[in-house]
Image 1 (cartoon, one colour):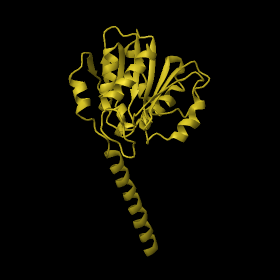
Image 2: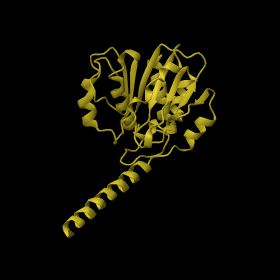
Image 3: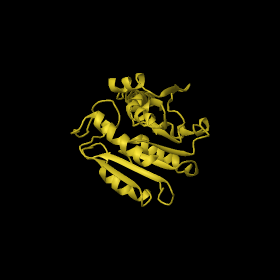
Image 4: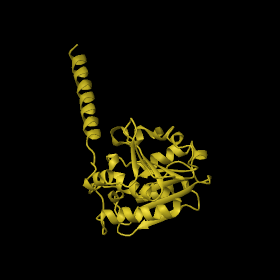
Length: 239
C-alpha cells in the first residue's frame, strides 16, 4: 500500500510540474512595442476588429488579399506596422490572433476568412517564423484557393513544389533564430521558381515590432528599415 501511495504521489507531482511548465511557457511571449501600437492608432486605412480579435487592414477597392499568421510566442499586433504599410498600398491584410500566440494551435485559422471578401480574386497566405510554416501547412490542402505563399524567416515542411503557387521567401542575413540547415533542406518543398530575398543586415525579430528576440543576431539596420524593405519587396511581387 505504501509503494502505491509513493507511486501516486510521484505521478501526481510530475503531472503538476508538467502543467506548471506548460502554463509558464504559453504565458511568456514577446509583446508588441510602441511602434506597433502607433501603427494601429495612426493608420490611413480602415482597421476592422472581428469578434475573435482578428484584425483586418482594409484599403479601398483591394484586388489582392493577404492572410497573416504571426510568429511563435509573439503578440499578433506586433505585425501591424508591416501590414498597415501593405494595406496603405492597396493590399487587404488579415492579421490572425493565435491561441497562446502559437499558430500551431490553430492551423485552420484562415477558414472562412476568404468568404468575407468574395470580390477579391488574388489571395496570399503566409506568416513569420512558426506562423509561416503553419500557413504553408494549411495551404497544402487549400492550394486552389490561393495565388501564393509568403514566408518571412520561415520554410515549408510540406511539399508544395508541384503547385503553381507564387512563393516569396524573405529572411535577414543576420538572422540567428531561423534554422539555416532546415531552411536549406526544405527548399525542395517549394516550386523551382520561388522568389527569395535576403535583407542585408536584417534580423529575425525585425519583421515585427516587438524588440529583440533571444538568440537572434544583431541587425545593422533599424526595425523600421527592415519592415520597409519587406513591404517594398512584397508590394513589388504580390500585386
